[in-house]
Image 1 (cartoon, rainbow, N blue to C red):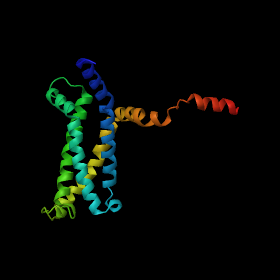
Image 2: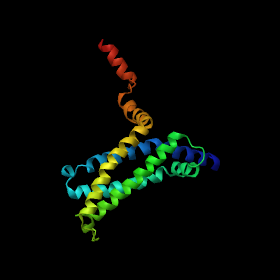
Image 3: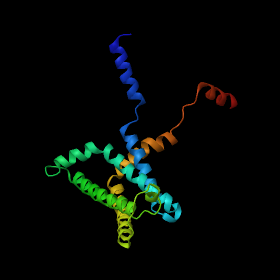
Image 4: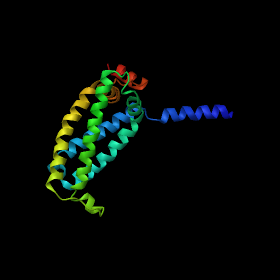
Length: 185
């Protein structure tokens, strides 16, 4: 086997083993959404899990931004030129979401009762930080709803492709199964 054939074979192998960008984004988006829903109910999780889940949520948002960096960069460069209205609105909505999540995560760290103490880091006590944290959490619900609505076509297509089709696809019968079914009739 020549080196060129080996390299081509290795490239093909990497392509097959690599997860698609859409599936990767969809998986991370689902994890972020589930973590957010769980984290929004402190009575359900308890304060310690709420705080650690909030920290994990902040990390997952950074990963989400890095995965979408090409889009962010492209729209930022073209924003004041000719950009479709949908892209412009989506970009502005994403900026609002980003600012809100930064406020949410930072104030959550500031008022932490368990996680920061576990790490030996100082925290801020104060009613204003708690109010700002609660307000940014409430705003985030509305912004996430708008974000989902605005990107619903992508969400629906990804769900159809990666959830519904694999679950409900008709499984091909093996020749043995077909023969057994025909023999039973």
